[in-house]
Figure 1: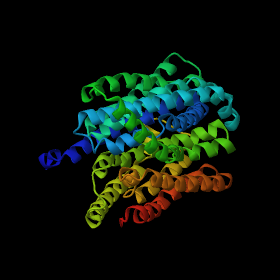
Figure 2 (figure 1 turned 60 degrees about the vertical axis):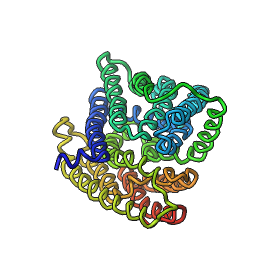
Figure 3 (figure 1 turned 180 degrees about the vertical axis):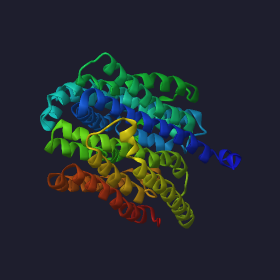
Figure 4 (figure 1 turned 90 degrees about the horizontal axis):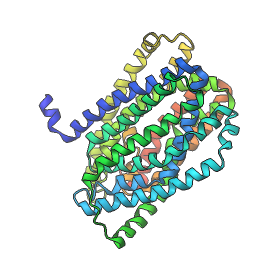
Length: 424
């Protein structure tokens, strides 16, 4: 049985990424527990609000070009010069965009603090924004290895990001630095990851580039990234809409309570993401025009298997989540924390079959249509949160966000039928 599993590259890659996922989930939990224990709900709230802003700006910084890398590298994976040109072109574009975004971020540094009514968020934000350049580079490099189906390296790089983040948080706690220094660990971790990721990537590329060819890929990557930018930008914001809305209506401490539960849920969300990461380069090579019935059959088989796999772990995690309180000796807000986690993860489990196929439009060369899908999801999430949070507080936010996971099923089926002529 073990030999049969490991003989399949897809399954072996999945095992590597599943192992990475487990460690990432543990580290993600520990980061929040350490912050909560050392700085309370206020510290946790400030960290997660700055983290949400950081993720939002990082998508603007990379400009969607990493999605062009995910799309084109699988197609040209066996042509060293072509894939090298794609990579270096994407690094150049993301670097220029990052510098622009960082400059704007520091120019308008006061906006997040005013919007969220928190001086701690404002100060912490200023110490973090320089990391956007390296985050952008890392997104492109990691997408490059994803496209090559070099999933062992992909798994290790994803894990290292959280290892460095955990070390940064421990450094801040050990030297008893202020709350504002917690989020700076996000930037430091990206710097360290870039050094390792770039050094490793050198053996996969050639520096013998043709200028005209390079310029042609600049146009292709920029155009593709431009079409995918809005969707990619909103995709990451969509995971933090609940935190933003709660931050507008409630204090940093209340945000911290919700963030603790939602962080565990986001850790669970890495499970369908790791399946998606393994599927994306495979999807890029499927020919939708040649045999749509065959492609639909493969996708529906994937949906069924993913639903069973993710749904099983969703129910398991809900049942055993209370153990977290005993393991980490947490006595406050147990019921509300478990309720938020259960609502979010239950809805994730229901949509578990479709979550790994979230980027299917992008991988089939439809970045603009992918953007439309994400816009619908984002607006639904924002509107429902704005309606539910003032009425039911953080429970309302969990219900609103969970409802969007279920809505995603119907939207994906509609978009696949309309733009790819596939029945899923």
